[in-house]
Structures are given as C-alpha cells and as structure tokens.
Length: 478
Ligand SMILES: Cc1cc2nc3c(=O)[nH]c(=O)nc-3n(C[C@H](O)[C@H](O)[C@H](O)COP(=O)(O)OP(=O)(O)OC[C@H]3O[C@@H](n4cnc5c(N)ncnc54)[C@H](O)[C@@H]3O)c2cc1C
Image (cartoon, rainbow, N blue to C red; front, top):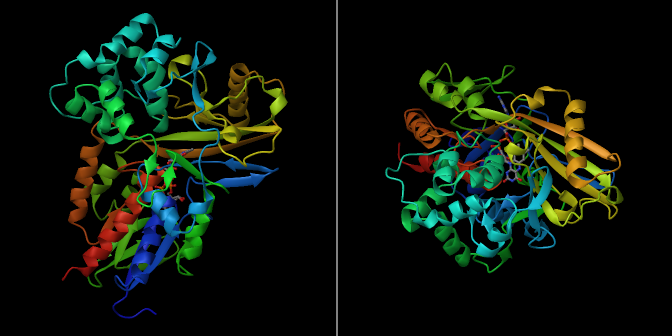
C-alpha cells in the first residue's frame, strides 16, 4: 500500500533495459529496500523493444535478437532469478563453424580466429581467405611495437596497424563492425572491444593476449558450478524473458501506448513531470531507457546542453529477414551456424544465421529457417526500398551463396529504424560528459543500449544499475 513515504519511480521505455530496471526496482522494494511504486511507460502496444519472437507455421522466428552472451553475467543471473534457467538452451551441435563470403562463395573462417586474432597457426596457413602476404603480415603482429598514447582509436585503424588490411576487411569488419552495424573506420575500440587495446598494452600483442585468454576460458563456469556455452537462447524464444518479467511486475506497473515527450522538474513539488502528450505524470525519480536521441528530445527544454550531447550519438537502421525453405531446396550442407558477408564482397546481406541449425525447436525437420541481417552504417540507403525489393535482394544473395533452388515457404521482414547506436571514436568521453551533466539534475538515471553496451546482457546490467543507484540515492540522508 502506498504511503507518504512511498517513492514513485517512472521507467521510460519497455525494451529489455526498461524491463530490467522496473524489475530490479520491484525486487528491491519487495526485499525492503524502500517503499517504491514503479510505473513503466512504453510508447508502442507491446513490451520487449527490439526483442520479438513470432510463432507461425510450426516455426519459431526471432525477429530481433536470438541469444545473449554469458560471460557478462547480468542476463544469466536475471534468468536464474526469474526461474528461467531450465529453459536456457545452448547452440546445438557444439563447435560448428562460421562461414564468411570470399570471392562470391562461402568459405569457413579459420578455426581459432577470435574476432580479429588468429590463434591457430595451422588453420590460418591453410585458409584460402588470406594471401601469403596477408598471412605473413598477421604473423608479424607480436613484433609490431605498442602504440604510443592511450587515446581512443577506431577499429579499422587498430586492426590495420596491428594485423593488416586483410584481417580488417575479411574478419574484423564483418564480425565486429557487424555486431554494431557500424563503419569500422568510425567505430570506437575503447567503447566496443576494450580488451584488444588492453592486450596490446599488457602483452604487446593481440595474438598472444588472445591465446592466453583462450587458455583461461573454454566455457564460462558460474559460481554454482553450472557450465554455459558462450551464447544461450531460450527454448520458447527470447520473448519468453520479456513475458516472464511482465508476469512478476506488480499489476498496474506497465502503461502501453504512452509516448514520453517532455521531462521537466517542478521545483515547488520537487517532483518530475513526465509529459506523454495525453497525460502528465509526477514522479520522485525517472529512469529513461529510451534511445539517446529520444531522451534528448524529452530534455531539450530542461537541459539543452545535455540534450545536445544525447542527440549527438548517431544511430543506424537495420532489418532482419527471416526465410524458411524446404531443406531439400538448399544445396549447401549447412554445417555451420551461419555466415558473415564482408562489405568488400558487395552483398546486401550483412550476416545470416542458420537458425534451425543453431538452435533446436525452431523449424520442422524438413524445413530450414534462415535469419538474415541487412542495413547498418555501411549500407545507408538499402532500407529505403520497400520490403519486396529488399527481400528479392536478400533471396538473390542466399540463392547464390547457398545454392537455393525453390522459393521460400515464408519470408518475414522486420525493420528496426534508428535501432543501433553508433559507438564512434570518442563515445566514452561523450558518455562521461553526459553522466557529469546528470549529476547536476534531480534524480534522473539513463540506461539502455545508447551508452555502455548494446548487447542484452549489457542492457540488463545497465537497467539494474540505474535502479540500484536511485534506491541508494533515496536511502542517503537528505
Ligand atoms: C536486429 C537486432 C538483433 C540483435 N541481436 C542481438 C543478439 O542476438 N544478442 C544481443 O545480446 N543483442 C542483440 N541485439 C542488441 C540488443 O537486442 C538491443 O541493443 C537491446 O535489446 C536494446 O534494448 P533497449 O531496452 O535498450 O532498447 P529498445 O529495445 O530499443 O527499447 C526501447 C523502447 O523504448 C520505446 N520508446 C521509444 N521512444 C519512446 C518514447 N518517447 N516514450 C516511451 N517509449 C518509447 C520503444 O518503443 C522501445 O520499446 C540486436 C539488436 C537488433 C536491432
């Protein structure tokens, strides 16, 4: 029951970041860490943000993300607390290869290639992906002197400098640039892959550093002794996580169809005013998990400088195209988890997951489900065309690369406009400036993909940290 001491916290945005924040506040309140009432405002008519699973024709389609990483523990821990551990699934057929497109055909990425660093000499030497000059250049990496200075650097500059152009074009761009749907010439290494510059600093080499890290960890072992593959999914699809959080929130927490337009502070009541166009809600504290530009819009009157910093974080748009084919219509053995397509290959597809090979229960035996990604910073105009044109280009790429002879049984395109924050060089400095500006404001926390990690595990960690920070702030003597 709400009393005068009850603090009302409004969480804005019903993606996984907002859900994690609302859930953590609910947990803390139930555990006696303050009397809290939580309201979660979501503009659309559903929760989950980019997480969306569709069940149709005996298929399980992941329209957005299909898994999360386990070596950042927040997502795994949340699933444990939600009673979902039994439903987590690892990729089937452990250790399948990942393909890449090379000279118009699929070729396996050499075994032991970890994001940018080769760790197995034999498989690297045998690989047709690199010229002999390129292989030699990679082999010299441990001899390349450390960079002087420790400022941020782009992914492209780092990889070219240490491992050579071929590794950048053939491996780092599609694997790392692909995760962020980014241009590697702009992508900040410090904000996305800090372990690589750290390896350069401590080991003088990313190849040696990666090898040592690999020896330490083949699988993640958690404190309970359970062993997890690096990525896990959920048996009924990622949206199970969203539904489960929704179930455990207090009734009345979630308000759908509420688009937040303005955030202001009422100095008389000492409360936030959250304007959704139709309604004006009051709160003691706010957690915004909106994309940075949307939070910036809402704050433009209250704090123009903060708004400017938030709106300066660029975003790229992506789309997924899920396609189901009769297995017999695909010539390729599909003995991998999927493929990436380096930008230099000129394909429309950025990457493709062999979804029904990767995870069990995604399609009937005689059907293959593929999930393709398109768009991103390197192909800005691609998504301007209508679905049918985009699908035709994706199908053309697939037909050429996988030897597909028949039409798809199903084709589902899902667009994610302005969905991927671009962590460009200097991103972390900007985030620090944003955090410093927030210090001057009444209780307002920002979380979500725009700041310190786009992955689901990062977003959950950020949402939970925002919730904990506010509860601590309330507990401090005024
Ligand atoms: C296609 C795709 C595939 C991905 N695959 C993976 C993967 O396999 N593994 C992984 O770890 N990560 C993956 N990611 C990244 C990860 O899924 C996202 O970064 C993460 O889910 C973002 O969560 P979020 O809550 O921060 O943002 P969002 O999911 O974008 O949620 C923001 C929410 O705010 C709402 N909103 C927007 N404006 C307003 C407003 N003014 N008022 C109220 N509400 C508003 C939106 O409707 C939305 O629900 C993928 C991302 C994409 C796009």
